[in-house]
Amino acid sequence: METLVEFIRASIRLMTPLLLAALGGAFMQVAGVPNVGMEGMMLLSALAAYIVSFTTGSWLLGIVFGVLAAMLIGSAYALLVLRFRADIFAVGITLNILVAGVAAYIIRQYYRQQSMLLSPDAKLLPELSIPFLEGNPLLKSLLNNYSLLIPISLVLVVVTYLIFYKTPFGFWLRAAGSNPLALTASGKSINGVRFSAFMISAALCGLAGAHLSLGYLGMFALSLVSGRGFVALAIVLFGSGHPITVLIASLIFGIADAASLRIPTQVIPPQYPLMLPYIITILAITIMSRFAKSSTSSE
Figure 1 (cartoon, rainbow, N blue to C red):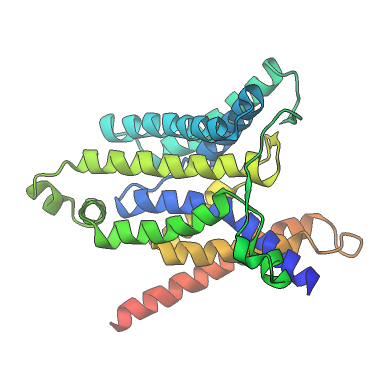
Figure 2 (cartoon, rainbow, N blue to C red; figure 1 turned 120 degrees about the horizontal axis):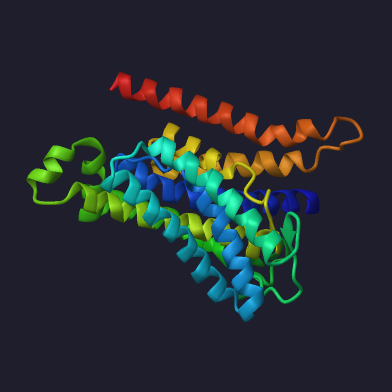
């Protein structure tokens, strides 16, 4: 039972950064501008959050500056796409490559490290506990002592759903993606609505990056994001940005990632377990996408 509980906890921890990034990507997807730059946003946020955390001794400032760093990338992304009509995929991929180079330059030029930063002065995210669960050993071990952004990410799934389908802003977002002419006729600016989507998406990617460096590993490495931005993009694209689909697909990735870490490398070469989360995620998303299409056609 203890092994199962640890497996579930690991799955939830590994799910969280992907869930936060994919929720951010959902805002842009429903607005008709897919976020291809999530990988770079997460990486720069993780670096900024970690540096500010060990420099100031405040995890809260680390999160704030991590989000601001991601939003800086998001604003540049929005400017190039919305104002100068640049191709969104070309700009997104370029920003990812640029950020990777900037991150490597910063840690090598200013901290004299080759690929990672690890400081004993870094303040990590606090862990939350629910007092009334303390009396039940199973629920205590299963639901308590998660870093701050894990329960917040689950709350954000509900918040995102309510914004999309229960608020005027959500209607404007969906209109910007599905019927821009109707949005213009209503007096709203398409670029204004889409710029808001860029900023919200960047902020959530910033939370994802901050969680990776301050809540999950407690360090920064150039390989920290490891393609999670692209997996999040795939989840958003195949799930059409629906928050519930995003949650399910992110959980599948978390479970697969946790399982890959428990496969004995003495039996199987270590490269194959590392591939497992991505293979399972691609298969699951493809199946979910085909099921959604068949359901739509039957209607």
